[in-house]
Length: 399
Image 1 (cartoon, one colour):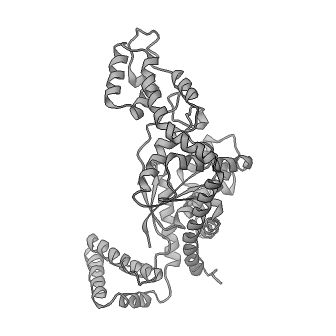
Image 2 (cartoon, helix red, strand yellow):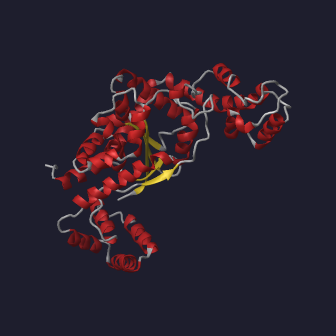
Image 3 (cartoon, helix red, strand yellow):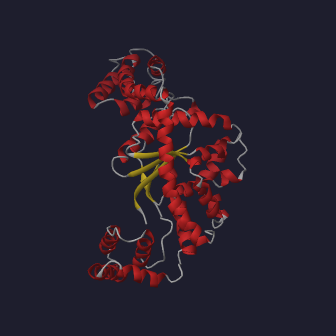
């Protein structure tokens, strides 16, 4: 049964940059105060494309976790763990591979896209073909209700929903399901049993979505029912069988406006990043040397902010008053490009200062970082074990 739980992961690429911070981490910082969140380092996923350079993965893992903590991901609010430390991910991936059609994997849009982008690597491997299914296992094993993704990742969530649906269709037809569901209804007590039946009828015969929501809430509130009985009641309510794996919903994350130093998307592949732990003098140097509107050859030439990558930094880091000053000054040649860049430099340095201070603390306290991860791994593994117990049982390998 789904609860309001969020699962999200990142491949360990080392120290993070402003693109990660504005595109992913700020969203995580908000979600951790609203829902139960599990954030994991997807180190096995790193091996799908970097299988020939595994020596970089360990350092990248710890660098990334330090940046998460420094950015404000709170271990008291969210569970932080490493994928490979929860081996149940691999077990579920293996079992799901037994039922997943090969064609489903080949049609995932990013499969061919990544092959083209990384054409210098030999990606004709089972691991690369199967990585969408490993992503599905990462999500399904925690019975999460939501997964925050960008638009380009929505097909992966739809794929995950298809896998869960196929699994439940194959294995959710529990022997004696209806009889067990009826027994579970009796455990609600006479008044609640009657209410459940009325709500089920209203939903199944009249399509009343409010009745469905009310019945689901009624089931959620029953502390005395086992998880298995709750799942049976949920399945019986919707006219299906026992829901073993939950179909997650995607949460579209706000599109990051963070561009790189050259005007392209900020990415290590383009060598155009500002890392969260970059030295202030290096940040200032990088921004001061950013390209600007090509029309502004001389200080007296008017320009258009829309043709300048620096304007995108102002879009993220400057207030309305500053943006008005930049726009007017650029179009009328009242300010030079160096003057225009200074407010963006100051805002970025101001934002990064507390992050860098916290990062230095964690760099000096590696045992604290490892303790946070160890505790998170144990929490995650407990949830994963619960799911795998049910999966093994219905697939006949729980002996």
